[in-house]
Amino acid sequence: QVQLVESGGGTVQSGGSLRLSCAASETIANFYTMAWYRQAPGKEREMVAAITSSGSPYYIASLRGRSTVSSDDSKNTFYLQMDNLKPEDTAVYSCEVLVDFGEHRYWGQGTQVTVSS
Image (cartoon, rainbow, N blue to C red):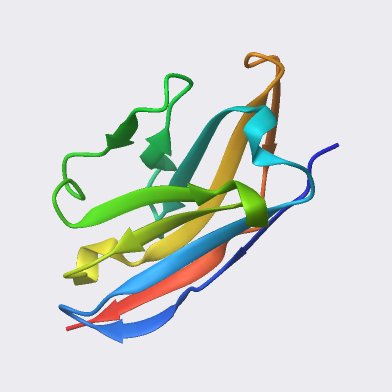
């Protein structure tokens, strides 16, 4: 079973930046996809960014142009860099991976991101 631990959340002012990390308990080279989700109070959970099975990045429209997903195989960690943060980005962010060609799904506990205006 894959364990994922997020870090890097916090409180920043509007326009600030944060880099979220998702540390995995095993090599990320085995992961089919690596994704970031967020859930704001009263809203549904949504995927905001991912590294797809082809290696291509995906970004939700509202984060496109101000976020970057990346990974470091040597650290078994993948990241979400978010810049020019806005109050509407406030949410709990969690990472999720698919393994075994999508047959199994694992996710972390989440990290809080709060953007003040």
